[in-house]
Length: 305
Image (tube, rainbow, N blue to C red):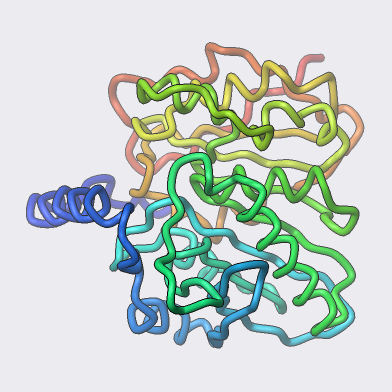
């Protein structure tokens, strides 16, 4: 495999810190976290066309490339606070060469409320609350009707993973679930960041039993301090015995850095319920190494004989 740079230069690191400061101050305002112009610049080279979907109280921004009607669609759901110039979920979607690919921003990230006279603010656990989840349900229904969709493959990044997992638990047309640096246990995530437990029932860890027969593949970064591997391990503690759930820790990846470059290769991992493919969710497998291994994708733990 071609080796890839693990670390950004110091100027980019400084810019990343400034982006975090911007997001901290912007999350409680009506200012969009991304601009339509930046999103278009990312989507256009992948031939993904933007539009807005009325969904519940919100207008959801979508970028889509549809080559086949009456088929399946890969749907990417953005994370909670994408940097204005580097929305990871959209970058991942742009690297997907499937015939049908659709990216969905979360409510209030690019588009606002249908009632444009009111501010659009959505933060914390409200990102997975009833109104937000109803909006995503409406959006998938609209997409299914428009393109005669036969099933969705969901890919969620960061908080988009929680949205995707909840959709997979509630809908009959979800064929598989992939997550990248995903918040799959919202209570464990909040505890890791010294926040109170969530008060709604949209914690994916509470629905792991419902998802046990859903083909799943979860990717986590060994150097991720935002969604550390312990969050994924906490989710796995609620997963009953199954052949359908797989995971892979990419030792050198951080929360943002590394995913987009590796995504075309990671997409090739089979997502299925193959007999004998069961993984043991050992806590030791989800402990970060102190030193990242340059340019190496950590292999899956071998099956037991």
